[in-house]
Amino acid sequence: MDEEYDVIVLGTGLKECILSGLLSVDGLKVLHMDRNDYYGGESTSLNLIQLWKKFRGNDKPPAHLGSSRDYNVDMVPKFMMANGTLVRVLIHTDVTKYLYFKAVDGSYVFNKGKVHKVPATDMEALKSPLMGIFEKRRARKFFIYVQDYDEKDPKTHEGMDLTRVSTRALIAKYGLDDNTVDFIGHALALHRDDRYLDEPALDTVKRMKLYAESLARFQGGSPYIYPLYGLGELPQAFARLSAVYGGTYMLNKPECKVEYDDEGKVCGVTSEGETARCKKVVCDPSYLPNKVVPYYAFSLLKHYLNRKQCNP
Image (cartoon, one colour):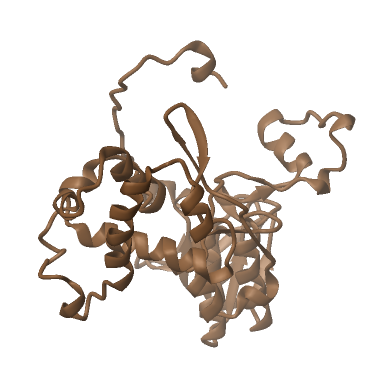
């Protein structure tokens, strides 16, 4: 390890691995280290033994749970939009050759006391009980407007400036009822609350277009895809890209200490008594706790939490 590098990267989260891969492709000499014995940082996917070690210490998982390698448990579970920015990054950097994806079979909403599938085809839309027949006709006109909308082509705007017109005003033009508005805002545009209704409609239209484009990309039952072996595969794919271009990886490196010269500039990283010299360090915040500004927040809840919710 006693060598000199252009860049040392600490932590193997997705951001760190993307940067490591791109820097290596650009011809820089990169050393990438992590205190953990796995890739992914806080967004990793753990096998059963790793999961037990993280949350139960030295306890071993029960034998009846099966082989540890059969598990890939995401610490931050998320789906990916099939035509989203992250997928385009994966394709552009050609790391998809290291990954296997599965299209998610369906997307569902809870409405009027029942769970319903979000329609993914014209036939499903016709049969769906989420809207009545007349409401479907009105909604279809709105969906056609969204589908045809081109931010750069005023002819598709129908006289509306969506950077100024609110989502509420845009939807009101088509006379859609409240249930349909909820469906559009939360099942298609994927807004987390109702603030979007009084915000410029352009963002909601873009979100709906992304949903439709992602749905059409793989012609599956939903717009989502998922790495076959968990989200931890994403940083590993960029780690492989870095390695192909000469990057060096070291896992399970404890106490990675960033070193500074007399002028206060970064000059290297020390771990296990060895120091690797470098010109720059890229790391996640946990490696520089003294450089991070703590942020505190107080949350007001609309309901109480019982003991089980506070102690999962």
